[in-house]
Length: 397
Image 1: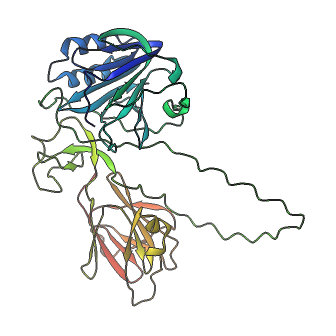
Image 2 (image 1 turned 30 degrees about the horizontal axis):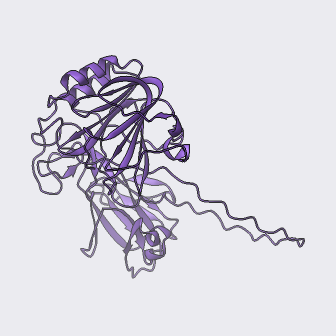
Image 3 (image 1 turned 180 degrees about the vertical axis):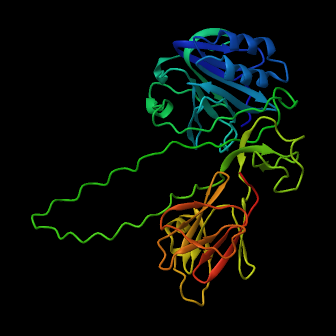
């Protein structure tokens, strides 16, 4: 997301923390114990290693809550730690982010946002939109529990906005995995190394309740319920973002990758030293016994007629259509499940079961428990009906 924080309109609300704005355009919000990190940012705002210094302080003796907006190369980024919370509202999105597991979140705000106009709000306490101070937040430090920044001509929220539209309940907000830096930071233009966008997860929305059916005086006939069939969780829609490192060509890779899975570049010297979330590359391929290959870039439903599976219809999984002369392959037989960098398999209550043979155990086959998920490793083989599938993975944990 392109932004000019030098001229962006910003306002504050509440008094539970400290808000600071630097001459270089940084917008900072901390809990009341944030004097030291504010002083660091003010003193080092023009230094290329500022972000490394900020992350190091936030991890060791930082304030209870910290969030900072800054720009690098015209793009806008976020650093946050502790109990801070961030909401971003644009014409197509409403997103809530917060650090997790006592880590530091380094986030490129361009991920998933196509518009140039947005309102970003930093929180250390809940402050309703109609309680914000409509006075321009200039350089310096003021007491505040929330800071709201409008970029790209976005209009500040007002009292007519629903409070829930800008302030999420922390108990229901979606977590974004925080980013843990490596010891040294790579020198780059402006204030930080080139960073791939991280995942943005929109908050869930409950479906509206259906209208109640009229009550009939006649006793209703209750059909016998069919046995419950265990189904895996639906795959995520769209680009999946995962924590990793970038090669010198900008390709995103597993944190432990020795060579780039996309271009073959040796990792280690030129990749981003601060771990970031970026678009997940294909995790490998499945090779069927007839030589057909299927890329592992999303969940796969395996069977004679996998196109009838609900998630294939919804587009959250791809069909892997196989024929089987032994007639022992079910219409929806098994599912290969992708979760971050991991690959697993699940039997979909098939008639004849799904079997796995671990790498190096060519004659040993173990039957999977229906509905359970089993992790896959490079070299594993799957048997579904009369077909054999070889598992080739790019990444090994």
